[in-house]
Length: 177
Image: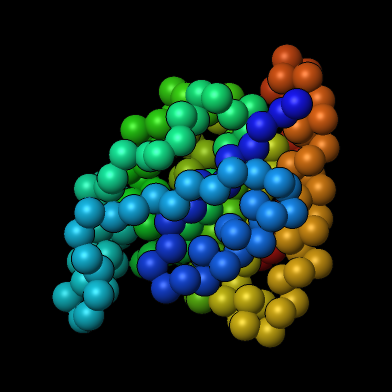
C-alpha cells in the first residue's frame, strides 16, 4: 500500500488546520515542522518577514518521520512577505533527496501564493503532482472544504499509480489565484 506524509509548518495555526484535515482525508501520517526559535511578538514577526524576503533558512528540529519511507510527501506552509516560510525552506533543503513524489499547498492572506509554490517545487527539484493555494478568508469562511476534497483526490489518484508511472509529464495541478 502506498504511504503518504503531510509535512507542514504553521505559525498561526491556519496551515496546521488545513494540514490536519488533509492528512485525515488521505489517511496520511502527519509531520509538524518545528522551529527552534520562537516567533511570537513584533520581533518574531519582523524576523519571519525578513527571513522570507531574503530567502534565508531557519533553524528547525529534525523530522520525527523518515521521509524516504513515503511514496508521496505533501508539503504545506504559510506565505510570508510573498515567499515561503523560512522553516519550510530549511525542511526542503534538508529532506529533498528523500522525496519521491511531491504535492504542495500554501496558505496566504495576501499575495505570493503562486510564487511560493513555484519556489517550493524548484527548491525540491520535483514537479508537484498537485498544488493548491488556500486563502485565509476561505479557511475562515469554511469554503475550503470543496477545494481540499479536489486536492486530496488528485493526490489519491497519484498514490494509486505505481511510482514509475507517476513521475511523467502528466501533472494534476490545482491552483487558486
